[in-house]
Every structure is written in C-alpha cells, then in structure tokens.
Image (tube, rainbow, N blue to C red; front, side):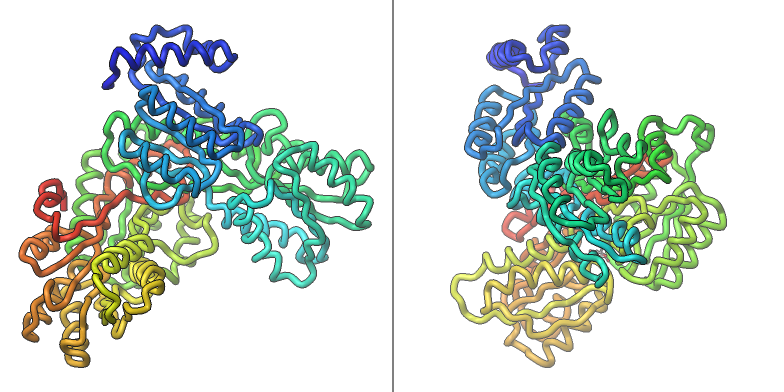
Length: 623
Ligand code: GYE
C-alpha cells in the first residue's frame, strides 16, 4: 500500500522488538520486509482473560494465511490510559489498519475517532460510543444471557432448583448484560432461585476456590451458570473434589481445543455452553476486504451464539471444521427464492434491482416474487419456495409479527432463511440464518439529531411524524430512535402522527390531514421515508406554504428523488438507508451453501445528507 521507506524502518524495528520479547517472531522472520503489503495494529485490552488470548491467537492464525500481512500486537494490561498511548504509538508507526478491543468504551472513544480519521478501524467486543469506526464486531450479550436462562429453566422447570451464577469482574458491561438477560428469564420461574453470585474475574482457579466455599455453605446447588467455560470448569473441579456429582454446569464461549467448552461438553463436564465468537478471525477477513477496497461492507456484525449440548456437539465441531464436501450445489447453480414485500417506494424499487443484478453477477438462479405489502401474499410466496425445494429463501418481511409458522415450515424442510432489510419479532433465533439490513433505530436518532442541531433558540417546535407501515420494523424503530433523542429536548413536540404506509400518496394524505388540523402551527415534518416526504411536500404546497422553508422536512432513505427535492430547496435533510443489499445477500447465500454459519445480524453502513451539502454528495449517489 502506501508504505513509505520510513515506515518500513519503524515497522522492522518494531518487529525486531517484538521478536526480542518473544512475540510472534517466527512468522515475521521468514518473510522479507519487501513482501509486506499491509501492517495491521492490534490493540488488545488485556491478556488476562482467556477469551482475549484466543482472540489474539485467531488474529495471528488468520493473518498467517496471508504472507503479505504483518500484525503488531499491543497489550493495555487493563489500563485505558495505556491503551490510548498504545493506539497513538501504533498510528505513529504507520499501520494501515487498526483492530482494537477497548478496555473501556467511553475512555477509548476519542482515540478511536482520531485513528478513524486517518485509517480504517475495526472495533471488537466492546463498542465505542457513536459510529466513528469502520466496522464493529461484537456479541449480543443480553441474548446470550437469555438463551442460557432458557436452557437452565428447561433443565430445572419440572423440579425447581437452586442456581449459582459465576461472573467476570464487576462493572464490565458485557457481564451486566449477560446477567440481566439471564435473570430476566429465570425470574419468570417461581421454583428456580439464584441463591448466590460468585465474582471470579474470568479466572478458573478463583472460580474453584470460591465455589469450594459455597459448597460448604449451601447443601443444595442444582445448576451453576458461569459467564465463561473456563470459570465453569473451575467450579466443576471444586464439586468433583468434594465427590459431588449431581450439579450441572453451564458455561459460555464454546472454544475448541483442550479444555475448550466444546471438549468439556463432549466429556460431560459441562451440561451445555453457548458459543461466543471473539471475532478475531473475522476481523482479519474483513480487514483485508477493507484494505482491498471491497464494496458493500457492513458497519456492524453480531455473530450468532449456538447452544451446544451433548446432543449436537459433534455435529457442531464437524460443521466448523470442514466446509461441506459433497455440496449438493457444487455442480449446479444455487437457487434462491426471494419474496419482496412490494414496490411501494423508490427505495424498494432500488432494492429489488440490486438483488436482481447481484444474483446475475453471482451466477445464482433467482426466483423473485413481488408482493403487495400484504403478509398473506408473502407467506404464500414463501410456501411456494418451500414446495419448489429452493436452496435458500430470503425475504423482506412487510411487518414484524406473525412469521413463526411459515418459518418453522422452512426449517422443517431444511431450507435456510435470510431476512433482508426488515426484521421480524421472534424469540426463536433458530428460525433464520441471518438478518442483513440497517439499524433503523439509529436512523431515527440521526434524523432527530439533525433536527435538534438546527435550532437557534428553545422556542417550541411542532412536529408532524409521518410513519411507515404499521407494525413494520423500520416504522417501529425509526419512531423509537427519534423519540429517544427528542425526549431530551422538551421544546420539540410531536403534535400529530399517523401512518402513510411508506408511499408518496400516503404521505400526501397524512400531511393534508395534519395541515387541516394545525395549519401554519406546524414547524417540522419527520417522514419515515423520502417518498412520504415528497407526498408531504405536495400537500404543503397545495396548502400554500413553502416546504423546506416555512416547514422543515427531514426524512429517511436518501433516494435520487430526495436529492432532487433538496437541490430544489424543498427538503432539508435525508438520512441514508441503503437499499443496495444485493451483493451482501448473495455473499451470504454462498456462505450458507458452503455449510458455514452466518452472523446473526449484519448491519449496513450509512450516513446523513443535509441539503447544504446535497450538491456535492449527489455526485456519488447510486440510487
Ligand atoms: O425506508 C422505505 C421502504 O424497509 C428500509 O421500506 C425499508 C423501508 C424504506 O418502503 O422507503
């Protein structure tokens, strides 16, 4: 890349220092510095937690597959100030990309933002605040906690019982989320009690010692739930030493290798574990995509957590070790059934086009069925895909609820399902392989942040909110995100809101009603999509007011028509929501057909476009 001579020298020096310190020297010595194309800096929060040691190992292993990639590791030894310095030093050394797993989200946010101004940054595990990074990969700790809670309640539901929870160091957010998810579920069962909590700082021996004390204290412990397999193993050892065999141990992580959770489940030490990927391997894979300027890369990735018990451990190990050998589609084209919800907006039309083009380019046979914004139609279409035996089903669910039955049918037929663009409401994550789409809550927040940034005084602002389709994910979430920010500014009040169903005609109608009621008292329109904003613009003009001037308008999508309206001075801001999901979807379909698992959630990368910079931004728009 843009390696300069000085940088080579510093990097060589650094590699030398690391070699002297016994770092990853073997690999570096074999390859001459001339072959180094990319240098990736890894700033690790600490190397006390086994999970982070594994993360670094994965990074090292994955990078070793590329002879032109060098990794420089730093360890912040649990100290945020040191980590800030580490990042500064890595930047000075001229790294091409930074991977950071922050010690503390708040303390590291400024330095990550600073790094991101210069180079791509991948954040792992603990998020920083805001969106000033290239990609985030991290687990959904709350849902892991909930899944563990569900499993343990199944184990104890009939008989009832006593549970001990073993946690990492107190104050760590991931831990609080896991515990909250776990307790939320367990709290529903009157006959199950969490009788004590151990804080074992992720350490096996500490878990063992503290568990030994508890075993003396409590005559009856039925299940131990530890936030890591490693701590679960410590607790197990304590029970074993006392000759107690009736206690069940459940952990989190599910690593391979000796004493990894998978082995412990196989050996019957653990009753179950919930996998929690470190993201190390994926970070390197995405780092290379980023450095090679691949297009359509996501902003956030939430890996899937799998429940592993004796019943599926061998199958799981096999599936992670080998890519399907006798892939049934290896000699023929993959068949993808896609159920599109309709053609209600410019966004939707661009989305359909993106999917069709990407399928063609990926040589995937696409059966594309377009609905009419009605759930019945989509369910019928999905059933037809099942009947035809397609390889993968993808669909954009018009509303959030009511999909369980048809998805269970797909599951029974062994056909994986990918949610595209919109989410569903379900507490069974096994019903779909992945959800690829935007963070709609954040889009709502962005619209609100833009709005509060406009005000020069604290005069009351009367807002009309034109909502999307009732019970649809983007309508629910865009409302939620907007309200979250607005609630801190009481002078902004939503005085009227109704659904315009994401269509231009719908937006026009709602705005007409709002104007009839409130007339020139309306200061702002927040529309959940551009089409409805365009409809509102018509209604405002018909009423005799000036859209964009007498009434400010902010909407979501950033379509071509929205840019034209901004250039004409009639729309004030549009928050991006990209419909160009086709390439990511085809990538996901191919990954599935190789027998690999997809992340649970793939979140697309997007921005905000105010009218002031519309002329400049317009040049790069693709839809
Ligand atoms: O914003 C709107 C469309 O689901 C994200 O649906 C999508 C939304 C999009 O009709 O224009």
